[in-house]
Image 1 (cartoon, helix red, strand yellow):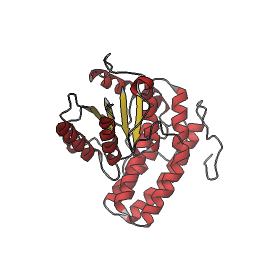
Image 2 (tube, each protein chain N blue to C red):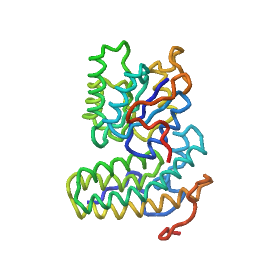
Image 3 (cartoon, helix red, strand yellow):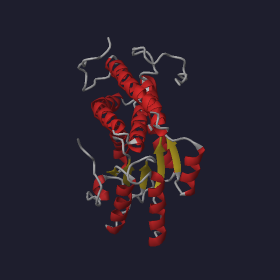
Amino acid sequence: MKILIVEDDFTSRKMLHSFLAPYGKTDIAVNGKEAVSAFRAAHAEGAPYHFICLDLMMPEMDGHEALKEIRRIEEEMKVRENVKVVITTCLKDGKNIVMAFRSQCEAYLVKPIDRKQLVDTMKRLDLFRATYPTSRKQCGESAGAGVRPGERR
Amino acid sequence: MPRTIHDGRDPTTSSSRNPFIFDYDGMLGRFDGDESLMAEIISLFIEDFPRQLEYLQGTLAAENWPETQRKAHSLRSACANVGAGSTGYAALSLEEATRDRRREDAERSMGRLAVEFRSFRLAAMKTKLVLKNQEPREGDAT
C-alpha cells in the first residue's frame, strides 16, 4: 500500500508515520501544496497513493483546498479508483466536517489520533485488500517531487 | 477572560499524577500499549517544543496574526497527540487570542504555554517511560 501523510506538525507527522509504516510505503508532505504535487507525481510515475491522511489547517494550501484539488485531478484523469482520504485534525466543528465530506473525504478523525481507530478506519475502507502491495519494496522506493520519504531528523 | 478547566483541576499544579498535565493512560491506550513508541514521540515533542515556542514568540512580536494562529493550532494538535492537556489548553488560548487579535491575551497565553510545557516535561520525566530528554532544565519546577 502507498500512503501519504500530510501534516505540518513535526511530532504529529512522526507519530502518524510510526503508526502507518508497518502497512506500506509512507511518504510525507508538510502542506496541501506539497500533497497535491506528490499526488500528481505518484500518478505520473504510475504508482498512485492508495491512502492519504490529511490535516486541515496548514500553511500554503490547507487540507480542504488540497482535497478539492486531488478530487478535481482524479476527475480530470478519469482514474478508475479514487484515493481514500482520511482527515486527521483538531477541528471538530460542524462546518469543517461538512465541508470535508462535501469534498469527498472518506472519514474524519479528530486528534488525538488513536492507532487502533486509525487502523479500523483503514479496514473499513478496504485498504488491506490482497491486491494492494503492502511492503515498501513492493510499492517501490522512489518518491515523487516534493515528497519527504521517511523524513529523518 | 480565563476559561474554566474542563476537569476542574488546577493546570499549574506540577504533578505526574495529574492527567490534565500529562495523560499517560490515555496516550498509552491510543498507542495500543506501545510504550517505547510513546517514549520516542514524547522525546521528539519535548525536543521540538522550544523551537516552536521561539518561532511563535517571533511571529507574535511581528504581529503576524494568521501565522501565529496557525502555528498555535499546529502546536495544539501535537499536544493532543502526546496527552499534554494543559499545554494544549494554553495553545488553544493563544490560538483564540491571535484569531481575535488580542495582543495582551496572546502574550499572557504565550507565557502560560511555556509554564505548562515545563510542567508537562517534568510529569513525563517522572513516569517510567525512558525519555531521551531527561536532563532537568533551568526553570523546571520541582
